[in-house]
Length: 261
Length: 218
Image (cartoon, each protein chain N blue to C red):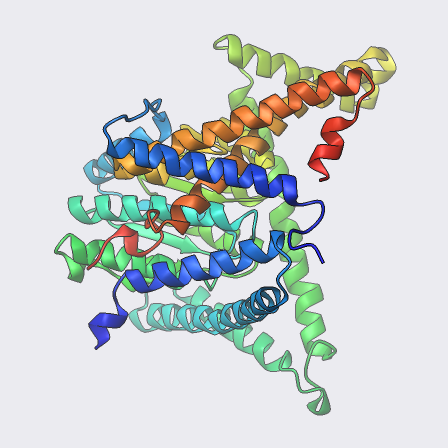
């Protein structure tokens, strides 16, 4: 009996290459060789948006999507959204802004509440934390959306940050945020919702940018360097596509066989 | 003792062990590992199910407080609690007592209230799309002009009156959908997958801590 499962060996090799690249760049950063990372306008705008909310005396709304933390595709988006929430909550606690976190998923709600509560404690202002501001709205997608829209219309937040896995409710939330005049920063890896976020919000983190946002915001060199590691995977992917296209054109299915190895 | 359990290293260690237990059996054929991974997945469902009660308790507490404080629009909180209790009661899985998903009251609430409300919320997206399109479809720069032209061509492709007027709208629309649109979508999908892998590596190494108490100790 083979130890490695047939049809997954090539995938394992690719995964190991990408993982080792990320580790390599993290280790390399420790020697002082820090890769240059382009600025992400949406992430840079978060501080400005919170500042504007404070100036206008309005709350900051920060949501992490409607996905859970378990799903292979959407879970990482929720984790990325929670990383952004961690940063936003810290900033809000530091400058005394009220942060409201609408939650759809009951298993994510305690994590979000813990992140916000710890942020207030770390800023030395634990009494300012109100558990009712981390709101569990409804496990139903449109129950959540209608409740969220109502909150937006009543509270009229100055900043509205949405990073995570969103589906059909994305445009409803973004358009309502636009209508009430909030500075909006959005981001998702669900490509069918990206168009909605791009047109309806001020800044949009596209796909992979949401995963980089957590590392980018911490400013930690090792974390930022790990972003460069994923470029190796990108190069690998593009190379496979180009070689595969050429080989298929000339009647060879070597790449298909390799991928199925 | 309680401080020990609040240490951030504990959830990080749990995350690393659980992640490895899911990754390794996917590629490597080791039966004990695979069955352990299956057991962990069952635990995950249990934890998620327990979390449902946390959500229900949180929702109840929030709305009870809103009623007690007579907060703005507090009377809606009464509706939330009444309907939540009604669904909970009628949906209890006790078929001997006439309760559960076959209960007529449960079906009535589901079919005549929840489903139409959900459909209404979904359908109002059409109006949001219209207002977003009205604001966006302005040729303020080259990129916006490309969006505008592509959008108009796609509308023409999907409007029977336009395709009847000029047949090639279908081919142009199909080309936009299948070539530039598909290429962009695939680029986003590949980038997103790579980003998720990098996030997983950082999580495995215990470096990505943003989702744990904002990344810091109290």
